[in-house]
Image (cartoon, rainbow, N blue to C red; front, side):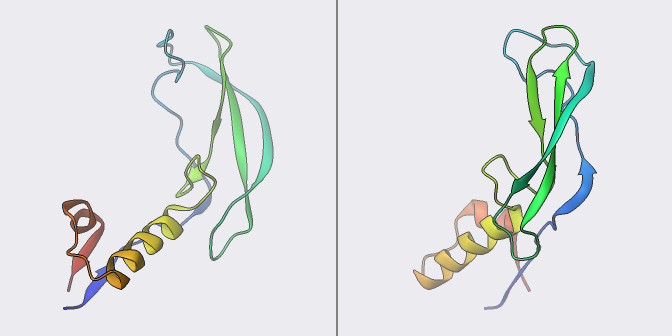
Length: 106
């Protein structure tokens, strides 16, 4: 059986703001750009990306927004998915339902 894996690439210039403030006591939808910084990531193509920092205008809570394809764990979705698929293949485990949503048999 062959598996083809669709990996979402890192898009360094594409940021998706949350719909609401991530702070638990606030649900405001208005943010302002607060700061930006380079963040090292574990990815086969990029060594670092720019993380945007935003501040909620209602509660003042600040939070980071990473480019599309990068998680808060500072690793790309591509690296995480590759590692999962490799571990499943090496251990000869049956793919879990989660892996079928990420990996599609060809």
